Length: 175
Length: 175
DNA sequence: GGAAAGTAATCTGTCCAACAGACTATATGC
DNA sequence: GCATATAGTCTGTTGGACAGATTACTTTCC
Image (cartoon, chains in turn green, orange, red, purple):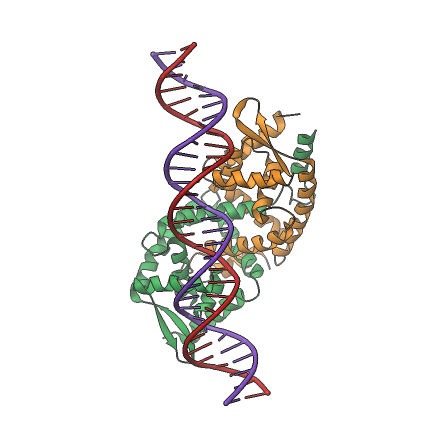
C-alpha cells in the first residue's frame, strides 16, 4: 500500500513538475558530467575546471575587477586570490593596477594565456558536444539558449549586471 | 520572447563560438541558485539540500539498495552511511534487511518521512517556479524536458539503468 | 561442502577547499 | 580630517570528500 502510494505520487503530476525535482537532479547530473569531461579538457591549466572558468571569464568577459570576476563565477574572494596567484605564476594572467582606482587590480590575460585558452576552448567545445550527443542539433541549440536565458534571469542581482558591465568594458577599453 | 530569439542572442558572437562555455556557466549558476533556494525550502530536513535529494530519491525512485541510491545521486557510499544515520535518527527513513540478500539494506521512508517530504516537495516546486520565472511557461516546460533528456543521456552508464531498476522495484515489490 | 573471490555496508584517518574574520590600502562623503 | 565603505590579502577553523581497511554476507567453482 505504502509503495503504491509512492508510485502514484511519482506519476501523478499536476503540472509536469511531477516526481521530486527533475530540475535539481538534471542540473546536478549534467554539471557533474560536464565537470569530469572539462576536467580532462583543461588538463594543461592550473586548478582544472576552476582554472578554465577563470581564464575563460577573464578573456571572454573581461570583468573589470577581481571581485567582479569572483562574483560572476560564484567564487569566494579569498579563494580568487590564490587562484590568480597560480595563474600569475604560470604566466597566464597578470594583475595590473587600475589607474582609476588604486585599490583595484585589472586582470588581463597574457599572450600565452590567450593561446592556451584557445586550445582548451576547442577541446571543451568538443567535450560539450559529446555531452549533449543524445540531443539532435536543433534541440541542443534550444537547450543552450534556454539555459543561458534562465541563468541570466536567475542570477542573484549583480551577476548579469556584472556581465553587462564586463561587456561594456570590453567595448570601451579594448586596445 | 521565444526560444528562437534567445538562440540568436546565444550564437550572436562574431566568430561563432568565441564565447567560452555558456553551458558550464549556465549550469553552474542555475544549480547554485537552485541550491540556495532549495536549501531554504528544506530547512526542516537534516542535511539541507542533500537531505532533500536523498529523501526525494528514496520516496520517488525507491532505489533497491543504499549503493544504488548513492550512485543515483552521485554521492560517495561512505557518505551515504552517515547521511542515512541522521535520517534514521530523525525517524524519516528506515534501513530494513533485504530478505533476499542479507548484506543489503532496503531504505524505506517512514510515514513521517513521507508527510514531511510532501510539504517540502511543495515548497521546492514553488521555489523552482520562481527560479525559472523569467521563462514563459511554454519555454519552461521545454527546458525541463530537454534537461531531463540530456541528463539521462549523459549520465555515466548505470545511473539511468539504476533508475529503471528502481522503477521496476516499485512495481514488483508490494507489501 | 568448503575455500576463494566478490559485494554491501561500515569505520577510520587524512586531506583539501570553503568560509569567516582580521588586516592593509585606498576611496568617498561629510 | 574624520567616518565609513570597498578591493584585495592573509590566517585559522571546520566540514565534507575520499581512500583503505574491516565486517558480514553471497556466489562461484572445484
